[in-house]
Image (cartoon, rainbow, N blue to C red; front, top):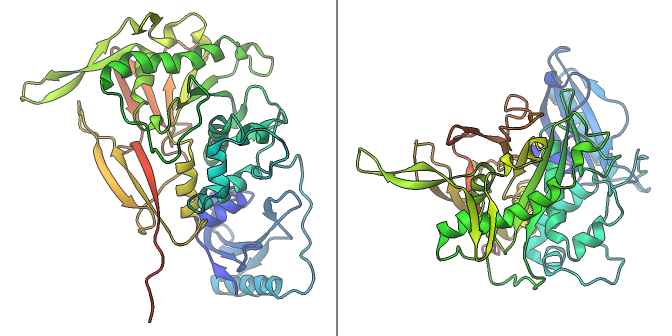
Amino acid sequence: MPTRIRKARFDEFTFGFSGSGDQENWNAVAYWSTHDSEALAALYYVEKADSYLGVLCLRNDQHRFAPHGPLVPFRTLREGEASICQKLKEIEERTTELVCPTGEGKPGVDLFTTNHNGTLNPVFVNIRDTMHSQAARKQLQEIANWFVDGDGNFVREFQTAGTDARLWELYLFRVFHALDMKIDQTSAVPDFTLELNGQKMFVEAVTANAGSNQAVDLMAGPTPRPDDFWKFIENDMPIIFGSPLYSKMKKSYWELENVKGRPFAIAVADFHAPGSMIWSHTALSIYLYGTSAEKVLGSDGRFVAMPKPLQSHVKGKKSIPTNFFAQPGAENVSAVIFSNAGTKAKFTRMGTLAGFGNPTMTVRRIGTLSNPEPGALEGIPFNVNIENGEYCENWADELEIYHNPNALIPWPDEDLIPAATHFRQKGDDLVWRGAPFRVLNSYTEVISKPSFPTE
C-alpha cells in the first residue's frame, strides 16, 4: 500500500531533488512511497500556473533515484494525490520486473562490498555489521550512490586505514550539495570543485589523525578531555591541527590551472583520538588567528572571556609559530573549513530522521549549545530525543568557515553561504555570524528499546 513519507526521507533517497525550472515557485505539498521504497513520488504546487505537478522517481541502473516519465499536471491537490497513489499501487501490484531507467555519467560507489584482502578498520566493521549502525549505514550508502570515486581507491581506503578521512569527505560532499552547490566530479584534485551562483570555489579535505596505528576500542567511548585541558588546547591541539594544514598548504593547489584566481579552502576535521572532536575544536581558531582567551573578572563581579594573543605553541621540545593565516604562503588559502560532525553520529541522526535504521533504536543527542551572551564562558547544555517531533537538524548546521584576513582571494561571505557559521578576526577579537544557538559539541546515544508488550 502506498505510504505518505516525510520530506527528509524523500530528500535522502533523491539527494535533494527539488523539481526543475523556476524552483522558487515549486512548493512541495506531498511525498509518497511504495511499501518497499522501490518507487517514490512527489507533488508540487506551482504558483505561476496555480496548479500541481506530480513527479515519479525510480532508481536508475546506477542506484540513484531520478525522475521517470513526464511531469503530470493536476488541477487540485486531491486529484494529484489520488493519481499518485494509483500509480504507486500499480507498481506494487505489477507481475513483471520493474524496468530501471538509464543513468548518465559515472556511477557512485558501493561502500560495503569488500573486494580486497586488506585489514578491515573496526569502525568500518561496526558501521557495516551492527544493528545500532543501520541508520548510518543506509544513509551513507544513499550518499555514496551519487559520489564518484576520482582515483579508484575510495572504497578500499574507507574500509581499511582511511575510514575517518573518507567519512569526512562523504560528509563534505553531502553538505556542499545541501548548500545548493554544483559539484564537478570530473576532476579529483583538489577534492571538491564547487560552484554557487556563478562563483567557482575549490576545497581540499584533510584530517588530523592519531600518531599511531593502534586499533580503536569501540566500547571505550569518547576520549576524555585532558587533565590540563586549557594548556592542551593552547599548545598540543594547535600542533595536531597545524601538521595537516601546513602539509596541504605546501602542496600549492592554487597554482593548478583550474584553481588559479579562484577561492581555495582547506577543510579539516579532528580524528586524532576517538571522540576528540567533541572538545578539541576551540584550538583551531587559536591556531589560525594566534589569539586565545583568558578569564577576567568583570566590573559586575562575573568572569568573562577576554582575548589573549599568543606567539607560539609548545609541546615538549617541539614549537611552532601561531597564527596560521599569517604564515608565508597562507595568503593563498582563502579560508579553513571545519566541522566536528563528519562522523558516524551525524549520519546516524540524519538517517534516523529520514526513517532509516532499526525501529527499536531510540536516538538521543546530548551536548552544548553556544551561549549568545557577550563574554559567556559556558555553553547551554541540551539532551533531546531527535524523534520528538520538534527537533530539527540540517546537514550544514555544524559547518564553520574561518576566513583568512590576509587572503589574496577572499572566500565568499555569509550572504552567499548563510547556512554556515562564519568567523572573522576583528582586531584581537574573533567574531562570528550564524545561528545564535549553534551546537558547539554533542554526542549521539543509540539505545535499543523494544516495543511495549501487548496483551
